[in-house]
Image (cartoon, rainbow, N blue to C red):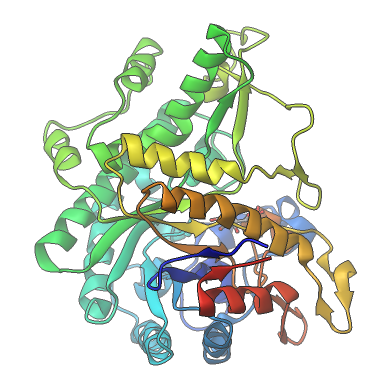
Length: 459
Ligand code: BG6
């Protein structure tokens, strides 16, 4: 049996988001794009379940935070809801301030460091109706929202994030039709991506001018592996990496977009509109801390068919997905499990991105129909323990090899509502009875507690 020891100050915990846990029907709140889309097309949501109820963190956060403490957490990532904190006229909602103040205070009272994220896919509807991040005006309103959040909570919150997986609303909302506004238009998509980056940089600039904690962003990094070393496969994988990793990672850490990406978008006449003053803003505002979400890699091969010239321009004009024979699968979710991917990401950050301080902000195993694994009243999720163990083994190796990785958060603390997938895939350390809202620790929660309290990875 091998024991791997993590540093004493390693961050152990889990992550969640406002829209997925609070319950949109509780407290005063303006509508988000999720409320709206669900009203329009409930059949696009798994089992037609929308964002109204969720696990009710809004009322049960005290119990949940106590559970976090009891199960080894020294840190927890939550997001603030823009739609809860401010109303349509930009007025502060005092009820929301009281709620978030109490959540933050309760975390701190339990010696759990709050990691606070400003935006996790939950655009207020009235702002989407003004163009969402296609509009510079919404960028400025986002910066105002961030400033208010900092002024309210920065005395206690020392670790902030601007966005969770900013590429997902771009892919989902503007390229592949799995988020509202369900547009398929790459030009608009790249404009949204670019403005999101401008918003991120403006917020970092403000934070660094006024506060002394840490600010970062959370990126879902998906290492892109070519089918072979053939130049056409390598090129396909390079372009996939440009679109899905480097389009955010490079400007965030290096202050500029990859030249190959700019050239490609220029060639296809898809460059977003920019302003001259953006260049300095992009260049000068690095982050202090990078969150890395890792679930699965991308496997890529050269395109077998040339896309029809009338079909909409999409990143996958340049590559096909490659279903590598023999790859290990999470059969309960349909995603590949490739533990070494987490190590490859870390080595890439070490060697090509200034060895930036980072942590695993999400990693986890979604499981459908998880109730089938209940024994004596609790879910025996040995598969999840194996999953975490496998990834942490590689993460530990990255640490030994000099990567600046500071922590590991599981997605997620308790089973939650997940966008169009609603309650299809369960990820939590705790299961939640959706009728009674009763929480029950799964076997993995006990295993994690032992790990987090000793810093020793044993299995
Ligand atoms: C992550 C998101 O990428 O994936 C979460 O940050 C989401 O918000 C999680 O819930 C799981 O997604 P799914 O589709 O498997 O439920």
